[in-house]
Image 1 (cartoon, rainbow, N blue to C red):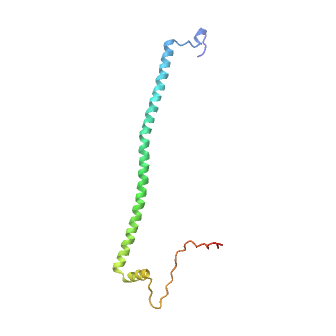
Image 2: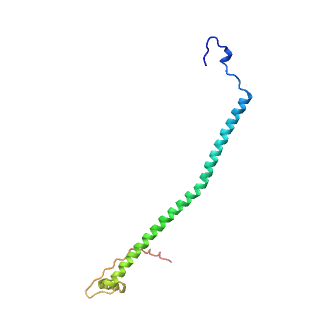
Image 3: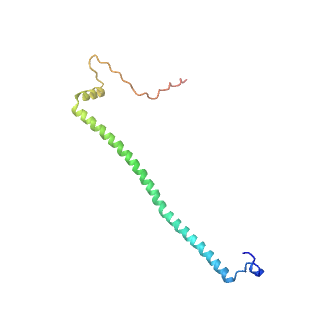
Amino acid sequence: MSYEPGQSVHALRPRPRRRSERKALLWTAVSNILSLLIVLGVLIALGLWIYPELVRRADLASQLEQKSAELAAEQALRKKREREKFLLENDPDYVETIARDKLELMKEGETIFRIEAAGPTPRPSPAGP
């Protein structure tokens, strides 16, 4: 707003708002605030509805990973046992080796060296009076 010659000075001052205009502005502000609260409420409700599903999905993914690891271990054990069964049925040398190992037998002139896994060393007991 700029002053032009011939214009009254009162035209430059903002005119006071009428009561109906103030009410309209108040209702617009209240309406905007209520709209914002409704949108926030809907977003919170969606979050509360989706969060348990996300937690359940993470739990299921963890269980799936665990079960997959168990399955892989069982498959490896099965494969090992199938190989051992095949060798026991078809390889006499393997059967002989297993039998001699379990019964601790040796052939004449043969020397057997056993390497045991190191266990905890026993502590000497303190001499008591």
